[in-house]
Image (cartoon, rainbow, N blue to C red; front, top):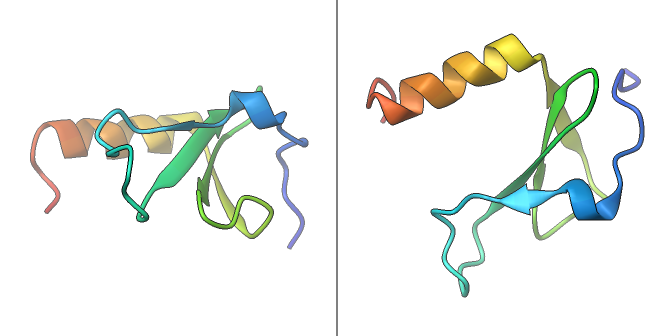
Length: 69
């Protein structure tokens, strides 16, 4: 399956503010005009997950509200 999301520039990726400086378990996120992309920070050229903005918003909202554990 080919990604719908165009190539994302390296400086567009960011880690969560909840990620510690010395942690090895991080994901990075970047937004494009089409989707929100998520990848493993340890494997930046590996697979990534492209998510529609509305679905990403629901996910983040559920995390903030404690509906996910």
